[in-house]
Figure 1: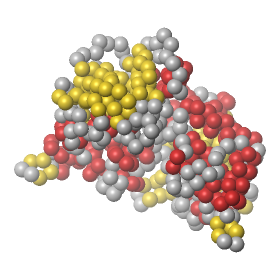
Figure 2 (figure 1 turned 90 degrees about the vertical axis):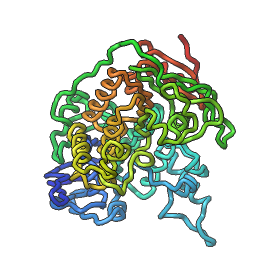
Figure 3 (figure 1 turned 90 degrees about the horizontal axis):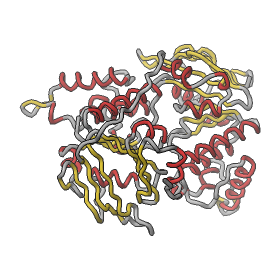
Figure 4 (figure 1 turned 180 degrees about the vertical axis):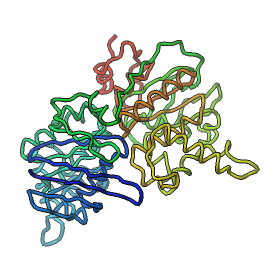
Amino acid sequence: MLLQMDSITKTYGNVTANSDVSFNLHKGEIHAIIGENGAGKTTLMRILYGMETPTSGSIRLNGKPVSFHSPTDAINNGIGMVHQHFMLFSSFTVAENIVIGREPSSPIGFDRKAAASVTDQLAKQYGMPVDPWAKVGDCSLGVQQRVEILKVLHQGAEIIILDEPTGVLTPLEVKELLAAIKSLAAQGKSFILISHKLQEIIEVADRITVLRDGKVTGTVQAADTDEEQLSKLMVGRDLVKLTREKKQSGKPVLEVNSLSIRGDRTKPLLSDVSLQVNEGEIVGIAGISGNGQSELLQAISGLLKPDKGSVRLLGQDVTGAPVGDIRRGGLAHIPEDRYQWGVSKEADVLENGLMGHTARHHKLGLLRGSSIRGMVAEWVERFGIKTGSLNTKAQFLSGGNLQKLIVARELAQDTPFLIAAEPTRGVDVGAMEIIHKELLQRRSAKGAILLVSSELTEVLKLSDRILVMFEGKIVGELMAETATEERISLLMAGGKHVG
């Protein structure tokens, strides 16, 4: 046995993150850990990587007891971790990022040619091609993921922990990454994979361990299980299959006409984009990240002023209007980047929940504390947000629980129009079921929703119409009844729409 974690328990005051968790890993194995948001997956891996100390329990590596007090200890023992949010320097080259901390030197200092040579050798050895001289900030997210993995391989990692590795990748990049993981495992590297994407887990993993409420609920062979069984182990119940009833949409709520944003690139960020979202309708936007979706949403919500075109909300021209005015005019917004746009990490759960709701929770100029606490507490209960208390700072919530808080807050605005950008990013299957149900209920109540998601299955499941963006333009429109992943993927890659 390469790695054994025996009876690991981790408590924070009255909160138990891990309770008597045992986990093991064989050489050359891909072992996935799945579970609900806050189930204890990340805490367990932080313990293994030396970022946390267990309250009790032990770790054995190659049969010998070990104790890690920092990531450096873990790295020196052959354990590397690729975090969900990449730890790269965007202004450095690929090679500089890979060798950082173990830089080759020459008599006059850092040897960049040697670093590039090392990177080339690593890339060829492990079948993960990269350009050593490229600036990381200019690389796609898929290439940045490869750089992170090559970095830990350069550090001598035999065990590689991947935390939500496909969360921001395109379908093609996901396939390439899963192939690379299998290839590395065949060469003797061992992987611990944390993910919410059950289909990918079943495809790539050898074994799967499920955590719920900090405890192991089962370990199964990937070849002997399916998504339904794993979902039940994760949430403790059968999931309800949601259906989107076909219905007639109403009058226009959002109208975007010939919207263009030049930006500072050779090609415009947005080029003559027009679309409409009606009452009782979900319009999905599909596209590889970086093809204008972000700029479109920012222009609609007032975060970015277009160079040309117009945005009308409920018949009113809101082009370039202040964000606050647009929100008061009937817009709520689940942002694509929860950390940059969705929360204040230093504020607590209560304060983050209150954002945008102050107008309806004050009397004579004073905020009504009991009313606010009741509102946020109801969201915590309904969405299953795991938090020590309403006074816990946002930075201490898992990414999935933070996402559920933002979704609950924006849905509670009860506005005629909702932008839902990556609404289920990083959440577990149980939370995904709740969020999808809420969005469909909003649609049934004549709400208009613009959905942007990198998950094609989500776009297909929820949308009445699907628009595909490529290089700042809408290159195709499909009705949900005739849309397929293959047809959408072709358009996303710049192909032509047929039929």
